[in-house]
Length: 136
Length: 136
Image: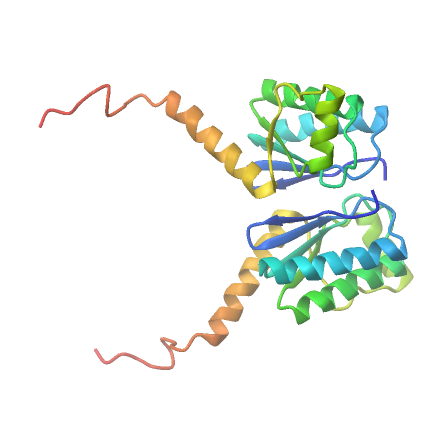
């Protein structure tokens, strides 16, 4: 049980972290996630940390690394399910989880990723009603 | 980390089992799931066992109990992500997971639950084209 499963749900990969992360488990998870993003073409990664009682600097760095890897592979990372006590501890430790988006639960995380993709596509839209008004 | 998180995704509750289940963890999971089914009104429970190397009689009984509790609360249980080796061991141990539906992955499990709900609604459909032909 030294491998964190990566579940595909629609356009999103879901990872629920429940076990104590060792260096090896973290590296394996990063490899698995990168492989799955490329294999499935998913555009979102949701990491659920409901089960974590504490997020220390090791976990914080792992989350940041996963977010960076996903970004390079054109996928957005959202961390969900953070407990209030974990958020308080994070701030007290001076860890700000730079570059990581958060949401309250999995569903809101999925909404965030879907909305973000819509925005991206909007930016590349070749035709815009404002730019080219149609003659009436 | 003695609590397995229950994640709500649409009309389905998702549980990913990754830790060694003790008696206490199993009872807590059953309680949590029953509470969440009632609180959310979800009609499906998906239990992911990708991370499990072995399913012994204790886990098998726990899955059966969860399926029975869910059924009473009008929710269907689907076990997903079983490894080939686990399936072989299950059969060799003579455990047949009675009353438990299985699917290859989370997405197929969700399809199964959605299809099952459609069937149920179909059975209670007051009007059927076959039963009451419309005069032309």
